[in-house]
Amino acid sequence: MCGIAGWVDSSAAAVGPGVIMAMTAAIAHRGPDGWGRWDGVSGNGRWRLSLGHRRLAIIDPAGGAQPMVSNDGRAILVFNGEIYNFAELRSELELLGRQFRTRSDTEVLLEAYQAWGIECVSRFRGMFAFALWDRVRERLFLARDRFGKKPLFLWRDDSGALAFASEIKALLAHPRVPARLDRASVAECLAWRYVPGPHTLFDGIVKLPPGCWACWEGGRLVQVSYWSPPDAGYSPGTHGGDAVAAFSRLLEECVALRMVSDVPFGAFLSGGIDSSAVVALMSRQSGRPVETFSVGYQEAGYSELAYARMVSKAFSTRHHELTIAAEDVITALPDLTRFRDAPVAEPADVPIHRLACEARRSVKMVLTGEGSDEVLGGYPKHRAEPWGALYRRACPPGLHRRLVEPLAAALPYRHHRAKTALHCFGLADPRQRLPRWFGAFSGDEVAALLALPVPPRAIDPRPFTVARRHSPMRAALAFDQASWLPDNLLERGDRMTMAAGIEARMPFMDHVLAHFLAKLPDRTRVGGRSGKRLLRLAMAGILPPEVLHRPKVGFRVPVADWFRDSLQGWVHELLLGPDSATRDWYRRDALVRLVEEHRVGRHNHEKALWLLITLEHFQRAYRLG
Image (cartoon, rainbow, N blue to C red; front, side, top):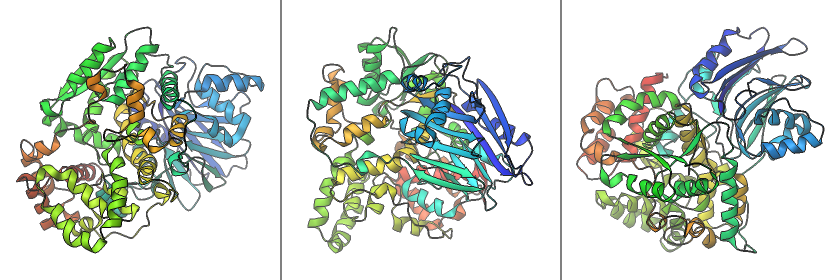
């Protein structure tokens, strides 16, 4: 797990050697164990390039330094992530005559490219973002893992110059990369609560999409998708054997692969079924007590520490826990905004970062339960989507607008989830409906709030590309896997853990597991009212019943209560005070109404207010014009 950065430019325009040092220094938190650089020039002298690396040593700490040069000197690699099947691939490569100097997965990746070329990415089981310079073909090869667990940002201009990095702050350290606001992304962020890829809030800086590789040759960049979430393509079938047993074996394999490490590691334990299942399977395979880490809140109704302690006791883990308060949010937001180079889209970023800092005191790597809901159907919306399809057939759009929408709007504060569901049921277009389930503002609300002029931009169709024969629930899962996960949750997981210099591995985010699950019927996989039926059956008799059958909570943070109580004045001053950096982005009457409706308890605007607050912190940090 590391941070990478680099650039390629014409020899006449290329910057000095100090630039790559500045770029890697900007992401030093990702790699506190060392750094390196490699500089080169094309054979005809037209192009110069520089590759930089910051290292967090997990596998082969003594031998895996980067940039790494292949045995024959042809290829130079900077790599962020882990290849979990590197031992298997190494054996295969050795049979082909490849020789190795280290025990690292980095060298396996390098030699895999030498043996199989660009097609090597299809053989990797892991999380990765890398850049490889092929000196013979004079080609820069960049790639990102299937689910997008590891980030890779790009900037390029019309001259053919290209810069890349694990985080945007490293790109901004390059003197040719401008810091300008992408106004279309502001509008998308208000609707989705994050900026959907490939865009960012920085004009001209984009993400390499998940499951994609790109090749730069002679100033031209070609991008190719090599993988899509299987829920976007498979038709569910029937499993010939025992689906629960097969799933159990596969999940245990996913956990075991992610326990390969040359440094101490542990697990984040929320007390929910996902992280509890990971801890249970780790305990089966570990010769020593698993280190577990949990976070709670002073407000007892939001804290899951009691359930986490129950799981810790059941599996005899060495347990660590901490508690956070409203003041911790105020203190953390400015720093976390800079770590993320974006608004802190989820309140859960704060406890996850605090948890990572606590874990870093005793381990360098953790396993988490991230991604389970998005492959096993754990959110209420997954089970609501089929009912929404029936509703739209029964209730004409005109009747919905005239009768249902006003009734939903009149529901009291505590029924905000029902209001969201009723609103989504009325949206026939999946490009509006699927982001709206977890979004902050509807399209009409964005138009009523935003005063900034916004250029039109088409939405990337890929998260919505699902065959008509698929169920509504499967379309929601495909959207989550293609957009909600990589552009929000996985981005959060990467930034908040790497900000503390710790690696996070996610057993549920395994493409082999995803392909298995996508072939199962919805009922087998998701089940009824509680969701994640397959996981609950697999963990029956292993997890405590209180944990196995409790409803989903997630990393909930009591911001709705805080915004009406202890943080009420802070919210008003941030958004409406004289020092606000974003108040001119919005129409004041709409902004005042939003703040006031939440304060008096008329409506629950916690998602919207959190987003506006974090956009304010973002603009204060970067002052983009």
